[in-house]
Image (cartoon, rainbow, N blue to C red; front, top):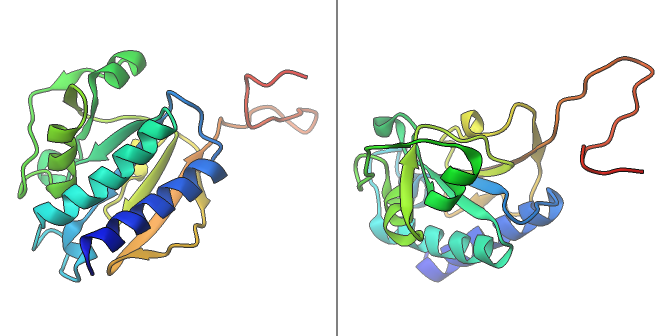
Amino acid sequence: MDLETIRQKARAVAEELITTAQMKPGQILVVGCSSSEIHNSKLGTDSSQEIGQAVFEALYACTKEHGLYLAAQCCEHLNRAVVLERAAAEKYGYEPVCAVPWLHGGGSFAMAAYYGLEDAVTVERVQAHAGIDIGDVLIGMQLKAVAVPVRVSQKTIGDAHVVCARTRPKYIGGERTHYTEDPEMRK
């Protein structure tokens, strides 16, 4: 699979998720990505800097156009830490840690984010509003408490399985409670 096709598919997934999840400017979209899985290798065995860069470029351009923050989940060698812009870390109260992802310790996608985001920092974890998992890398821990699957039409990028989710506030109360997905929405 060529890099332009990877960029196009990554962007298509992001656009569909952002629209379906009704993401608002300033929210966080977390992405975990296995470049190994994209080019048909076992997870974590054959990282590709070019593939990680291609996916990052597509998703960063897309999130910037929508006014969103992109967060890149690292691999298990960095305990699934997350790379994002310092402005997002400050806005949401995430404390930076001293970790720099590289090709075989954090992954190619996280490395591309670390060097490609504006004023990037690494944090231990986030509570993102939506997420894209490319290659079954387990992004669920980076989502807010109630994650809802989002079925997108693009099921794979290369050979990597793609799973998406959005989040919503918790429903509390009982049978007499009326709910809205957006607590800021007033009638």
